[in-house]
Length: 234
Ligand code: GH3
Ligand code: MG
Ligand code: MG
Image (cartoon, rainbow, N blue to C red; front, side, top):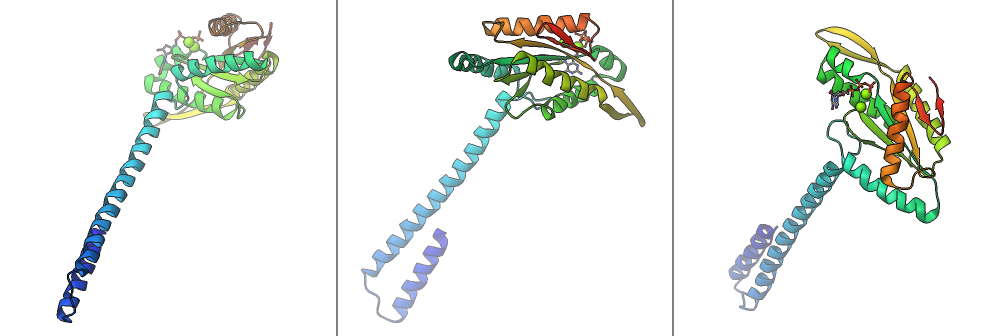
């Protein structure tokens, strides 16, 4: 940009000299052109740098709240949001529920097909859960193969219904993959425990309740959702 201004002005001076009508105050125009060009150049450079910085910060922010394997929110973000949602629920006296999912017999999947396939299965299950929740809910990886769905403004009976719909969807999904040139198909099931702020008073109680219900679901035969006092069977 400044080069164009400078060239333009040099050509202007040359034409003035050639036409013998050059006067020293014409230099002022050149100086204004020159510093104007430098100003425009520096501003455009700063703007480009700012855009790149904003992009970098946005990316870093997204990475700090996302689980790198599955792409859903990470545990740290879950805990932060959970705290905020509990406060919001108390303030507006609104219901709040969550479902804690755990993949059934996941160790056997790892042992049979290897960890890489296990990783793919886990990622796929997270995607299936993500596809089957409402816009107002959100999914986070709570632990190894435990996935939490937080459901604001939702009563536990409704949460159990949603969780059971997700459970059924996962059960009916055939997971296909290729290993050593052989096409394989596996069926995965999940169990879930529901917790609600109506029967828990704190974040810890909420998590404990979901954990206990999940444990019950495992003990009662897996592939089921427990919450709201009665199981939603497969
Ligand atoms: P259950 O039905 O009772 O839940 O049995 P399970 O085999 O799913 O549960 P268990 O706790 O015995 O094993 C969980 C396994 O999940 C063990 C661990 O290696 C595996 N796991 C945890 N995180 C990951 C991961 O990110 N990738 C893979 N591939 N495996 C994982
Ligand atoms: Mg498991
Ligand atoms: Mg587990």
